[in-house]
Length: 303
Image 1 (tube, rainbow, N blue to C red):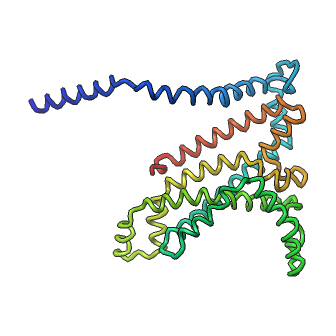
Image 2 (tube, rainbow, N blue to C red; image 1 turned 45 degrees about the vertical axis):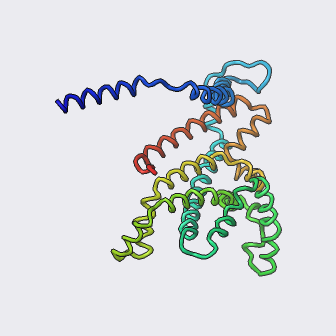
Image 3 (cartoon, rainbow, N blue to C red; image 1 turned 135 degrees about the vertical axis):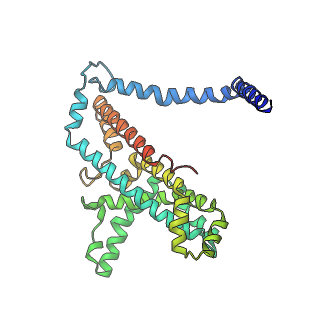
């Protein structure tokens, strides 16, 4: 009898939950956001994909050309070079930023003096505009460092790395990392602070040293935060634009021209449909990468 009553009660509760009506206030908040997102993102995206199958220059008459723009993009060395630079830059920067930010987070959550003040200092780059940071570092790379190299007799520093086609990307990675580390650092600090102190006390009692605690406790328990930082970082670095403009403007030559720069330059020179095809390819590749990231990290991103 008791079991029957519990089953009936459980079924009634489940039916009550399923029949629970959503409050109209939720739709009131949801509807404007959906409309704005659709008008600002979805509709322009669909229009852009449509025109990628034409010969449009952005205005005036146009005709359908099928997959001509896509075929041309696959065989265009400038497009392929910008894709290679963008993905290589994003991969290197994600690794560098996450390694440095995690190590800083470990240090800034330890029992050290002035750690609150140090946290405030380390997050300053996050509030400065990317283009301003780029111009400041461009001056340092082109003037201050060569002058210091000449004074100290260091040949490597006597010329700006931004003028070297083989090394200009290094300067871009350094500046991007300098701006990105604070945001990544804050996420790692939040992750480390969420770990109960009892876990470390138990590990210490069992004889685990600091390195073992870092490898066997801290890293596994902040794995979800690592996933967040990697996904957000890769997404941001694939869209790199302002820092590259301020540092190298895509040069020397086209050695540091990203996909975003290539697409925008194409819009400015009348290659609207062609660059929309490039943007569509970039969108598809980005979606594939995001799906692969989520599939690989599934089950490890629970915070």
